Amino acid sequence: MTSRSVINGTYATIGVDKGEIYREALTFIVKLTLVADPILAVTVRKIISFFNQAGGTGKTTLAQNLGYQLAQRQHRVLLVDIDPQASLTAFMGLEPFELKQTIADSLLKDAPLPIHHNLHGVDLVPSNILLSAAEVQLHSVIAREWRLKQALSPVQGSYDFLLIDCPPTLGIFSILSLVASTHVLIPIQTHFKAFLGVELLLDSIRQVKERINPALAIAGVVPMMHESRTSQGKVILDGINEQLGVIATIFPAIPRAISFADASMARQPLAIYDPKHPSVQLLSSIAKNLESI
Image 1 (tube, rainbow, N blue to C red):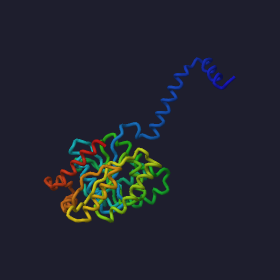
Image 2: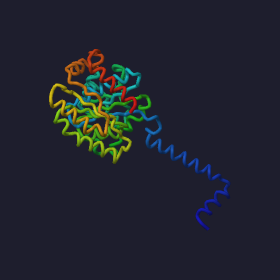
Image 3: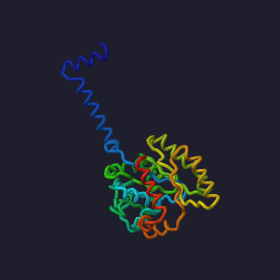
Image 4: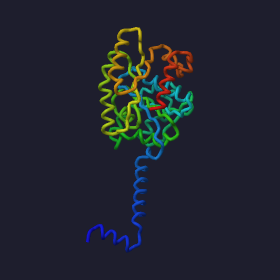
């Protein structure tokens, strides 16, 4: 007697519908999957990491201003500061050193995200320098690459866009961000030195995509601090379009402008600080494009 006939005979003897058994087993597996990975239980939101391992690319400024522009387009936006420098936290009007809870508590202690609501129309999960200590502690945490994804999953259903400001490194916080994200947006300064690091940056994204997060996609490249009147600016912008345009959307270049620094010092998005500034329309057009990624 085969194993199949034994099983069939057993079901027949006890009067159990095999189809019902299969349906119940399938339901159990689905429930188990959702418990193991709660992100699957909710509608997938756009979670975008602003990532470049080079410093001074305008990454934080871009995250702040695109978050504001998306909110102006009636989207629910959560900004997540996962950089120990806490520039985004400061730009949004908080004092990093005065914070009692930050993203570090959620990564290390499984605490709920400390969300500050309605800062210029967006919400913010802040950071401060204590996150640097958390980087060391995370090295001994099991499945540390998934910690940010797990921390975001209970709240992401409340937002249309979650924008993560990564640190300017290839360290653990950048990896956590890429693992948690659906997309990565690459700000790149139109200078030769910044352009040299693009290959390493793309390789980091490739490794995360191949080994951990196969759904990760490049949302686009934003040339930042562009100086159109310099030969270097023109050459590097042409290089960005030629070499990166085949793998990603190249958004309009954001020109270098002191107004960005002034707006940051005033702890406001550029559109509030200087509504008539030409870059406001460029940022608005990028935000519009992000709606369709």
